[in-house]
Length: 421
Image 1 (cartoon, one colour):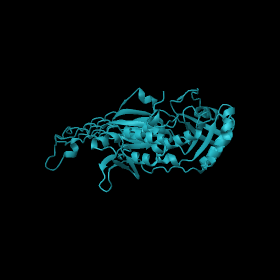
Image 2 (cartoon, helix red, strand yellow):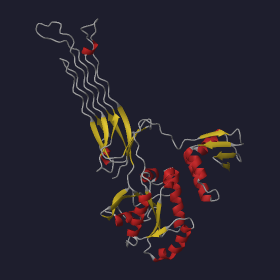
Image 3 (cartoon, helix red, strand yellow):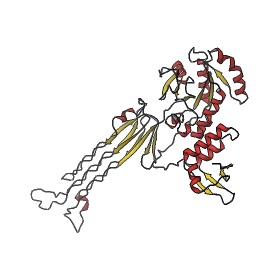
Image 4 (tube, rainbow, N blue to C red):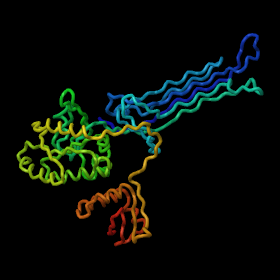
Protein backbone atom coordinates (compact mmCIF):
# COMPACT_ATOMS: atom_id res chain seq x y z
CA UNK A 1 0.00 0.00 0.00
CA UNK A 2 1.24 3.46 -0.93
CA UNK A 3 -0.30 6.45 0.87
CA UNK A 4 0.43 9.95 -0.41
CA UNK A 5 -2.47 11.86 1.17
CA UNK A 6 -3.70 11.55 4.76
CA UNK A 7 -5.59 13.59 7.33
CA UNK A 8 -4.39 13.52 10.92
CA UNK A 9 -5.43 15.33 14.09
CA UNK A 10 -2.73 16.99 16.15
CA UNK A 11 -3.07 18.31 19.69
CA UNK A 12 -0.37 20.35 21.36
CA UNK A 13 0.04 20.14 25.11
CA UNK A 14 -1.72 22.41 27.57
CA UNK A 15 0.51 24.68 29.60
CA UNK A 16 0.96 23.80 33.25
CA UNK A 17 -0.93 25.77 35.89
CA UNK A 18 0.78 28.45 37.92
CA UNK A 19 0.67 27.93 41.69
CA UNK A 20 -0.69 30.00 44.55
CA UNK A 21 1.66 29.51 47.50
CA UNK A 22 3.07 31.56 50.35
CA UNK A 23 6.57 31.05 51.58
CA UNK A 24 6.65 29.26 54.91
CA UNK A 25 9.78 29.38 57.01
CA UNK A 26 10.41 29.42 60.72
CA UNK A 27 10.53 32.96 62.10
CA UNK A 28 9.14 34.32 58.77
CA UNK A 29 5.37 34.33 59.19
CA UNK A 30 4.90 36.56 56.13
CA UNK A 31 7.38 35.09 53.71
CA UNK A 32 5.51 36.36 50.70
CA UNK A 33 4.21 34.68 47.54
CA UNK A 34 6.43 32.04 45.94
CA UNK A 35 4.12 30.10 43.69
CA UNK A 36 5.98 28.87 40.61
CA UNK A 37 5.00 29.10 36.96
CA UNK A 38 3.57 26.22 34.97
CA UNK A 39 5.68 24.64 32.28
CA UNK A 40 5.06 25.18 28.58
CA UNK A 41 3.03 22.48 26.85
CA UNK A 42 4.68 20.33 24.25
CA UNK A 43 4.42 21.40 20.62
CA UNK A 44 3.68 19.12 17.68
CA UNK A 45 6.50 19.37 15.14
CA UNK A 46 6.87 17.74 11.74
CA UNK A 47 10.42 16.83 10.74
CA UNK A 48 11.75 15.48 7.45
CA UNK A 49 13.39 12.07 7.59
CA UNK A 50 15.19 11.32 4.33
CA UNK A 51 14.70 7.55 4.54
CA UNK A 52 10.89 7.78 4.40
CA UNK A 53 9.09 7.81 1.05
CA UNK A 54 5.41 7.20 1.91
CA UNK A 55 2.82 8.33 4.46
CA UNK A 56 1.83 4.75 5.25
CA UNK A 57 2.50 4.96 8.97
CA UNK A 58 -0.27 7.53 9.38
CA UNK A 59 -2.81 4.96 8.22
CA UNK A 60 -2.59 3.27 11.60
CA UNK A 61 -2.48 6.37 13.79
CA UNK A 62 -4.53 9.47 13.10
CA UNK A 63 -4.26 11.14 16.54
CA UNK A 64 -1.08 12.79 17.80
CA UNK A 65 -1.01 14.53 21.17
CA UNK A 66 1.94 16.24 22.83
CA UNK A 67 2.20 16.10 26.64
CA UNK A 68 1.06 18.97 28.83
CA UNK A 69 3.42 21.07 30.89
CA UNK A 70 3.75 20.40 34.61
CA UNK A 71 2.21 22.66 37.21
CA UNK A 72 4.33 25.16 39.10
CA UNK A 73 5.52 24.38 42.62
CA UNK A 74 6.38 26.24 45.82
CA UNK A 75 9.60 28.17 46.36
CA UNK A 76 9.28 29.69 42.88
CA UNK A 77 9.82 26.31 41.24
CA UNK A 78 8.61 26.33 37.66
CA UNK A 79 6.89 23.28 36.23
CA UNK A 80 8.72 21.16 33.70
CA UNK A 81 7.91 21.87 30.07
CA UNK A 82 6.07 19.20 28.14
CA UNK A 83 8.26 17.33 25.68
CA UNK A 84 7.73 18.31 22.06
CA UNK A 85 6.20 15.61 19.89
CA UNK A 86 8.33 15.10 16.78
CA UNK A 87 6.50 13.46 13.88
CA UNK A 88 8.74 12.32 11.06
CA UNK A 89 7.56 12.74 7.48
CA UNK A 90 9.14 12.01 4.08
CA UNK A 91 10.79 14.69 1.94
CA UNK A 92 8.26 16.41 -0.27
CA UNK A 93 5.46 16.58 2.31
CA UNK A 94 3.05 19.51 1.98
CA UNK A 95 0.91 20.43 4.97
CA UNK A 96 -2.54 22.04 4.80
CA UNK A 97 -5.08 23.08 7.41
CA UNK A 98 -7.81 20.62 6.49
CA UNK A 99 -10.63 22.94 7.53
CA UNK A 100 -9.50 26.23 5.95
CA UNK A 101 -7.33 24.65 3.19
CA UNK A 102 -4.59 27.13 4.09
CA UNK A 103 -1.02 26.12 3.36
CA UNK A 104 1.02 25.60 6.51
CA UNK A 105 4.32 24.45 5.07
CA UNK A 106 6.29 22.55 2.46
CA UNK A 107 8.97 20.24 3.85
CA UNK A 108 11.68 19.27 1.38
CA UNK A 109 15.16 18.95 2.88
CA UNK A 110 16.33 16.40 5.44
CA UNK A 111 15.97 17.67 9.00
CA UNK A 112 13.67 20.54 8.03
CA UNK A 113 11.03 21.22 10.70
CA UNK A 114 7.63 22.86 10.95
CA UNK A 115 5.67 23.57 14.13
CA UNK A 116 2.07 22.73 13.26
CA UNK A 117 0.59 23.07 16.76
CA UNK A 118 2.32 25.25 19.33
CA UNK A 119 2.25 24.20 22.95
CA UNK A 120 0.26 26.28 25.39
CA UNK A 121 2.07 28.84 27.53
CA UNK A 122 2.49 27.94 31.16
CA UNK A 123 0.38 29.86 33.66
CA UNK A 124 2.07 32.38 35.94
CA UNK A 125 2.36 31.72 39.65
CA UNK A 126 1.17 34.21 42.26
CA UNK A 127 4.70 35.61 42.63
CA UNK A 128 4.01 37.68 39.50
CA UNK A 129 0.92 39.34 40.94
CA UNK A 130 2.44 40.87 44.06
CA UNK A 131 2.32 44.64 44.31
CA UNK A 132 2.76 47.31 46.92
CA UNK A 133 -0.98 47.24 47.52
CA UNK A 134 -1.31 43.47 47.48
CA UNK A 135 1.75 41.82 48.89
CA UNK A 136 0.07 38.45 49.50
CA UNK A 137 -1.82 37.77 46.26
CA UNK A 138 -3.95 34.66 46.00
CA UNK A 139 -3.93 34.90 42.24
CA UNK A 140 -2.25 32.74 39.62
CA UNK A 141 -2.89 31.66 36.05
CA UNK A 142 -3.88 28.34 34.64
CA UNK A 143 -1.96 27.10 31.68
CA UNK A 144 -2.92 28.11 28.16
CA UNK A 145 -4.84 25.38 26.31
CA UNK A 146 -3.04 23.62 23.50
CA UNK A 147 -4.02 23.84 19.87
CA UNK A 148 -6.24 21.24 18.18
CA UNK A 149 -5.86 21.03 14.45
CA UNK A 150 -6.82 18.69 11.63
CA UNK A 151 -4.09 18.78 9.00
CA UNK A 152 -3.83 17.16 5.60
CA UNK A 153 -0.47 15.80 4.54
CA UNK A 154 0.18 15.45 0.82
CA UNK A 155 3.31 13.83 -0.55
CA UNK A 156 4.87 15.00 -3.79
CA UNK A 157 7.70 12.67 -4.65
CA UNK A 158 11.03 14.37 -5.20
CA UNK A 159 12.81 13.11 -8.30
CA UNK A 160 15.08 14.60 -10.93
CA UNK A 161 13.27 12.87 -13.78
CA UNK A 162 9.65 11.81 -14.18
CA UNK A 163 8.41 9.14 -16.59
CA UNK A 164 5.05 10.14 -18.08
CA UNK A 165 2.85 8.66 -20.77
CA UNK A 166 -0.30 6.71 -21.48
CA UNK A 167 -1.14 3.60 -19.45
CA UNK A 168 0.82 0.54 -20.61
CA UNK A 169 3.34 2.65 -22.55
CA UNK A 170 6.20 0.88 -20.76
CA UNK A 171 7.23 3.41 -18.10
CA UNK A 172 7.55 0.82 -15.34
CA UNK A 173 9.57 -1.43 -17.62
CA UNK A 174 11.98 1.41 -18.39
CA UNK A 175 12.36 2.14 -14.66
CA UNK A 176 13.05 -1.54 -13.96
CA UNK A 177 15.53 -1.74 -16.85
CA UNK A 178 17.57 1.26 -15.76
CA UNK A 179 17.39 1.31 -11.94
CA UNK A 180 17.28 -0.99 -8.93
CA UNK A 181 13.52 -0.41 -8.58
CA UNK A 182 11.25 -3.40 -9.09
CA UNK A 183 7.81 -2.08 -9.98
CA UNK A 184 4.96 -4.42 -10.85
CA UNK A 185 4.90 -4.93 -14.61
CA UNK A 186 2.15 -6.55 -16.69
CA UNK A 187 0.39 -6.06 -20.02
CA UNK A 188 -2.85 -4.39 -19.00
CA UNK A 189 -3.94 -0.77 -18.44
CA UNK A 190 -3.18 0.90 -15.13
CA UNK A 191 -0.61 -1.69 -14.08
CA UNK A 192 1.05 1.01 -12.00
CA UNK A 193 -1.29 2.17 -9.26
CA UNK A 194 1.39 3.88 -7.19
CA UNK A 195 4.47 5.90 -8.10
CA UNK A 196 7.87 4.22 -7.88
CA UNK A 197 11.32 5.74 -7.37
CA UNK A 198 14.64 4.42 -8.60
CA UNK A 199 18.22 5.64 -8.90
CA UNK A 200 19.81 5.59 -12.36
CA UNK A 201 23.55 4.99 -11.96
CA UNK A 202 25.21 5.85 -15.26
CA UNK A 203 28.63 5.48 -13.68
CA UNK A 204 29.99 6.01 -10.13
CA UNK A 205 30.00 9.78 -10.60
CA UNK A 206 26.77 10.31 -12.53
CA UNK A 207 23.42 9.40 -10.99
CA UNK A 208 19.87 10.73 -11.05
CA UNK A 209 16.61 9.88 -9.30
CA UNK A 210 13.79 8.81 -11.60
CA UNK A 211 10.09 8.38 -10.80
CA UNK A 212 7.60 6.22 -12.66
CA UNK A 213 4.33 8.18 -12.61
CA UNK A 214 1.16 6.10 -13.16
CA UNK A 215 -0.35 6.36 -16.62
CA UNK A 216 -2.36 9.43 -17.52
CA UNK A 217 -5.44 9.54 -19.70
CA UNK A 218 -7.51 12.25 -21.30
CA UNK A 219 -9.33 14.07 -18.54
CA UNK A 220 -6.68 13.35 -15.87
CA UNK A 221 -6.41 17.06 -15.02
CA UNK A 222 -10.14 16.93 -14.17
CA UNK A 223 -9.64 13.96 -11.88
CA UNK A 224 -10.57 11.26 -14.41
CA UNK A 225 -8.83 7.92 -13.94
CA UNK A 226 -5.93 8.27 -11.52
CA UNK A 227 -6.02 12.02 -12.18
CA UNK A 228 -5.18 14.34 -9.29
CA UNK A 229 -3.87 11.51 -7.10
CA UNK A 230 -0.70 11.19 -9.16
CA UNK A 231 -0.36 14.26 -11.36
CA UNK A 232 1.07 16.14 -8.38
CA UNK A 233 4.06 13.77 -8.28
CA UNK A 234 5.24 15.20 -11.61
CA UNK A 235 5.36 18.73 -10.20
CA UNK A 236 8.71 18.45 -8.43
CA UNK A 237 10.59 16.88 -11.33
CA UNK A 238 12.96 18.94 -13.49
CA UNK A 239 12.91 16.80 -16.65
CA UNK A 240 10.27 14.50 -18.14
CA UNK A 241 10.83 11.36 -20.18
CA UNK A 242 7.72 11.19 -22.34
CA UNK A 243 7.21 7.49 -23.14
CA UNK A 244 5.14 6.69 -26.23
CA UNK A 245 3.63 3.26 -26.76
CA UNK A 246 4.97 1.99 -30.07
CA UNK A 247 1.92 -0.28 -30.42
CA UNK A 248 -0.53 2.59 -30.05
CA UNK A 249 -2.70 3.45 -33.05
CA UNK A 250 -1.75 7.12 -32.70
CA UNK A 251 1.47 7.82 -30.73
CA UNK A 252 1.49 11.46 -31.92
CA UNK A 253 -2.06 11.92 -30.65
CA UNK A 254 -1.10 10.34 -27.31
CA UNK A 255 1.78 12.81 -27.07
CA UNK A 256 -0.58 15.78 -27.50
CA UNK A 257 -3.10 14.35 -25.04
CA UNK A 258 -0.57 13.89 -22.26
CA UNK A 259 0.96 17.35 -22.77
CA UNK A 260 -2.48 18.96 -22.67
CA UNK A 261 -3.31 17.21 -19.41
CA UNK A 262 0.00 18.26 -17.84
CA UNK A 263 -0.50 21.89 -18.87
CA UNK A 264 -4.09 22.00 -17.66
CA UNK A 265 -3.03 20.68 -14.27
CA UNK A 266 -0.06 23.04 -13.78
CA UNK A 267 1.30 25.74 -16.11
CA UNK A 268 4.87 24.94 -15.07
CA UNK A 269 4.62 21.36 -16.32
CA UNK A 270 4.18 22.64 -19.88
CA UNK A 271 7.59 24.30 -19.68
CA UNK A 272 9.58 21.32 -18.39
CA UNK A 273 12.14 19.93 -20.85
CA UNK A 274 11.12 16.56 -22.29
CA UNK A 275 12.98 13.63 -23.78
CA UNK A 276 10.48 11.88 -26.07
CA UNK A 277 11.00 8.16 -26.70
CA UNK A 278 9.08 5.58 -28.73
CA UNK A 279 9.13 2.37 -26.70
CA UNK A 280 8.90 -1.25 -27.96
CA UNK A 281 11.20 -0.60 -30.95
CA UNK A 282 12.19 -4.29 -30.82
CA UNK A 283 8.85 -5.16 -32.46
CA UNK A 284 8.86 -5.20 -36.31
CA UNK A 285 5.59 -3.25 -36.60
CA UNK A 286 7.03 -0.47 -34.42
CA UNK A 287 10.25 -0.36 -36.44
CA UNK A 288 8.17 -0.01 -39.60
CA UNK A 289 6.53 3.23 -38.48
CA UNK A 290 9.44 4.77 -36.55
CA UNK A 291 10.94 6.74 -39.48
CA UNK A 292 7.56 8.25 -40.36
CA UNK A 293 6.88 9.20 -36.73
CA UNK A 294 10.35 10.68 -36.32
CA UNK A 295 9.66 12.99 -39.27
CA UNK A 296 6.26 13.98 -37.84
CA UNK A 297 7.91 14.99 -34.57
CA UNK A 298 10.82 16.67 -36.36
CA UNK A 299 8.30 18.93 -38.11
CA UNK A 300 7.33 20.09 -34.61
CA UNK A 301 10.99 20.55 -33.59
CA UNK A 302 10.84 17.52 -31.29
CA UNK A 303 13.56 14.86 -31.41
CA UNK A 304 12.07 11.36 -31.18
CA UNK A 305 14.26 8.63 -29.70
CA UNK A 306 13.59 4.91 -29.94
CA UNK A 307 14.20 2.27 -27.30
CA UNK A 308 13.08 -1.08 -25.97
CA UNK A 309 12.65 -1.68 -22.27
CA UNK A 310 12.43 -5.43 -22.89
CA UNK A 311 15.69 -5.88 -24.84
CA UNK A 312 17.35 -2.78 -23.29
CA UNK A 313 18.00 -1.46 -26.79
CA UNK A 314 19.15 2.22 -26.63
CA UNK A 315 18.40 2.35 -22.88
CA UNK A 316 21.85 3.57 -21.91
CA UNK A 317 21.87 6.19 -24.67
CA UNK A 318 18.42 7.37 -23.52
CA UNK A 319 19.59 7.75 -19.92
CA UNK A 320 22.73 9.68 -20.90
CA UNK A 321 20.66 12.01 -23.08
CA UNK A 322 18.30 12.58 -20.15
CA UNK A 323 21.22 13.29 -17.82
CA UNK A 324 22.59 15.88 -20.27
CA UNK A 325 19.19 17.59 -20.46
CA UNK A 326 19.00 17.52 -16.66
CA UNK A 327 22.28 19.43 -16.38
CA UNK A 328 20.78 22.31 -18.36
CA UNK A 329 17.44 22.28 -16.56
CA UNK A 330 17.01 25.10 -14.02
CA UNK A 331 17.06 24.19 -10.34
CA UNK A 332 13.99 25.56 -8.53
CA UNK A 333 14.92 28.23 -6.03
CA UNK A 334 14.40 27.22 -2.43
CA UNK A 335 12.12 29.44 -0.39
CA UNK A 336 13.97 31.38 2.27
CA UNK A 337 11.05 31.33 4.67
CA UNK A 338 8.52 28.62 5.36
CA UNK A 339 5.11 29.67 4.03
CA UNK A 340 2.56 29.63 6.84
CA UNK A 341 -1.18 30.31 6.79
CA UNK A 342 -1.25 31.53 3.21
CA UNK A 343 -4.68 31.34 1.65
CA UNK A 344 -4.97 29.17 -1.43
CA UNK A 345 -6.78 30.29 -4.56
CA UNK A 346 -9.25 27.70 -5.77
CA UNK A 347 -8.38 27.14 -9.45
CA UNK A 348 -11.84 25.66 -10.06
CA UNK A 349 -13.68 28.78 -8.89
CA UNK A 350 -15.63 30.69 -11.54
CA UNK A 351 -18.21 33.46 -11.98
CA UNK A 352 -21.14 33.71 -14.38
CA UNK A 353 -22.76 37.08 -15.22
CA UNK A 354 -24.42 38.97 -18.04
CA UNK A 355 -21.86 40.97 -19.99
CA UNK A 356 -22.90 44.64 -20.18
CA UNK A 357 -20.29 45.55 -22.78
CA UNK A 358 -20.99 42.63 -25.10
CA UNK A 359 -24.19 40.80 -25.78
CA UNK A 360 -24.52 37.51 -23.98
CA UNK A 361 -22.97 35.97 -20.88
CA UNK A 362 -19.42 35.91 -19.57
CA UNK A 363 -17.73 33.15 -17.60
CA UNK A 364 -14.51 33.94 -15.73
CA UNK A 365 -12.25 31.60 -13.78
CA UNK A 366 -8.67 30.39 -13.90
CA UNK A 367 -9.25 26.78 -14.93
CA UNK A 368 -12.15 27.37 -17.32
CA UNK A 369 -10.41 30.23 -19.16
CA UNK A 370 -7.17 28.28 -19.44
CA UNK A 371 -9.05 25.25 -20.76
CA UNK A 372 -10.82 27.41 -23.37
CA UNK A 373 -7.51 28.82 -24.60
CA UNK A 374 -6.08 25.29 -24.96
CA UNK A 375 -9.05 23.79 -26.80
CA UNK A 376 -8.87 23.03 -30.52
CA UNK A 377 -12.31 24.26 -31.49
CA UNK A 378 -12.11 22.71 -34.93
CA UNK A 379 -11.74 19.26 -33.39
CA UNK A 380 -15.01 17.71 -32.10
CA UNK A 381 -13.18 15.61 -29.53
CA UNK A 382 -11.59 18.68 -27.98
CA UNK A 383 -14.94 20.47 -27.94
CA UNK A 384 -16.59 17.51 -26.19
CA UNK A 385 -13.81 17.46 -23.62
CA UNK A 386 -14.34 21.15 -22.94
CA UNK A 387 -18.07 20.53 -22.57
CA UNK A 388 -17.34 17.79 -20.03
CA UNK A 389 -15.13 20.18 -18.11
CA UNK A 390 -17.87 22.83 -18.07
CA UNK A 391 -20.29 20.28 -16.72
CA UNK A 392 -17.80 18.95 -14.17
CA UNK A 393 -17.04 22.40 -12.83
CA UNK A 394 -20.71 23.33 -12.64
CA UNK A 395 -20.53 26.08 -15.29
CA UNK A 396 -23.23 24.41 -17.35
CA UNK A 397 -25.62 24.32 -14.40
CA UNK A 398 -24.79 27.88 -13.34
CA UNK A 399 -25.59 29.24 -16.80
CA UNK A 400 -28.93 27.43 -16.89
CA UNK A 401 -29.86 28.72 -13.45
CA UNK A 402 -28.90 32.25 -14.52
CA UNK A 403 -31.44 32.01 -17.35
CA UNK A 404 -29.40 31.54 -20.50
CA UNK A 405 -31.47 30.95 -23.65
CA UNK A 406 -30.90 28.94 -26.81
CA UNK A 407 -28.62 30.75 -29.26
CA UNK A 408 -27.19 33.27 -26.77
CA UNK A 409 -23.45 33.90 -26.70
CA UNK A 410 -21.14 32.77 -23.92
CA UNK A 411 -17.82 34.65 -23.66
CA UNK A 412 -14.95 32.73 -22.06
CA UNK A 413 -11.64 34.53 -22.29
CA UNK A 414 -11.24 35.59 -25.90
CA UNK A 415 -13.61 32.92 -27.19
CA UNK A 416 -17.25 33.48 -28.12
CA UNK A 417 -19.42 30.36 -27.95
CA UNK A 418 -23.04 29.82 -28.92
CA UNK A 419 -25.26 28.16 -26.31
CA UNK A 420 -27.10 25.09 -27.62
CA UNK A 421 -29.27 22.90 -25.40
